[in-house]
Picture 1 (cartoon, rainbow, N blue to C red):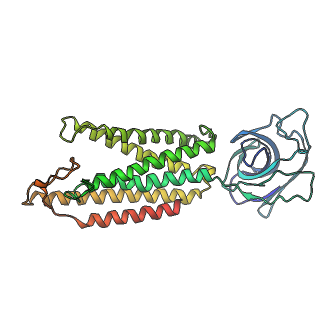
Picture 2: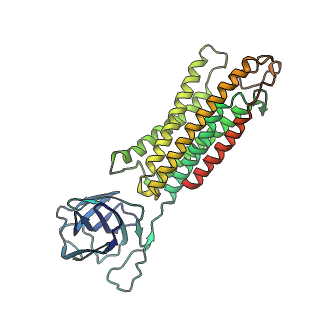
Picture 3: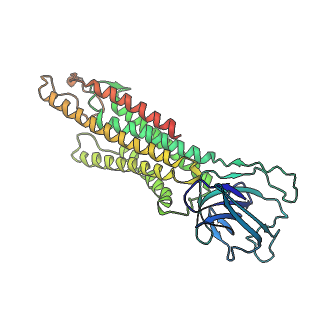
Length: 369
C-alpha cells in the first residue's frame, strides 16, 4: 500500500475486506505514518468505527515501510486465513475491497477517515491475479438527499418564513391572498415546506442508517443526530401550536405569540448548528473548510439582514407617528378590516432587501448542495 502524504499530522492509508460496499463490517489492514515511523497494523470494523485487534500484528509478516518524496509505502505479507481469529477474514473467499485515508494515533489507532473513501463495486476473488480492482468513489445518495432537503428547508424556506413573519407584517397591511394577509400566507407556505421536507429528510436518513445513527469519534460529531432529533421535535410541535392558537383578541394571546416565537427560533438556530456539524461527518463528502466558510458567511448575512430590517422598522414607526390617516389593520389579525383599509407609508427598501435575501440564500444553497 502507498499514498501521497499531504497533511502535517500522523495518518494512515487502509484497505478493508468488507461484506458489502461499506466499511460497517470489515477486516482492516492499515499502513500508518506516526511520529516519523511507517508501520502496518491489523484492526476490525464492527460498525462504522474501528477497533484494533488484540494483537495488531497477528497474521502479518515481512513488514517494511518507507517515507520518500512525500509518498508513504508499506509492503507486507498477510496470512490467507486465521483459524483462531474470525476478525481476520479468509482471503480464499471473495470480498469487497475498500480503501480510505485519515488521521492515525499511537498504537495504530485509526481515526475517522476523510471524504476520499473508495471501493470496488463487485466482490473480488483474490486468487485471480487478472481481476480488475479499479476503485470507485463511494457515494451516499440518501445521505445527500437528506442533507439537501434539510439545507433547502431551513436555509431557504425557514429563513424566508421567519423573516416574513418578523419584519414584513406591515408591508401589505390591506392586501390578501385567498382572504388572508399576504405575510401570513407566505409565512405559512414556507413553514409547511419546512415541515414536509424535514420529515422526508429524517425518513431518508433512518432508511440509510437503518436506525439511530451510531456515530463514533469527537463529541461534537455525536451531537449531530441528537440535535437533529430535537430540531425535528420542535419543527413538529410548532405548527400544532399554531393550529390550536387562541384568537388575536384573546387575553392570553401573548402566551401563544411568545411560545410560537421561542419554539420557532430555537428550531431555526438548532437547525443551523446541526447542519454545520453535519459538514464534518465523512458521509457528507463535503469540503470541510469551504462548508464552514459558507455557514459563517450565511450567519453574518443573517445578522446584517436582521439589523437592517430592525433599523427600517424603527424609521417606519417614526413616520407612522405623524401619519394623519386612520389606524391601520392590526398585525395580529389575519384578515383585513375594510373600515381600516388605509395605506400607510411603505418602505421600498424592505422589498429590495427580501429580494436580495432570496438571492443570497439561493446562492449559498447552490454552493452547499
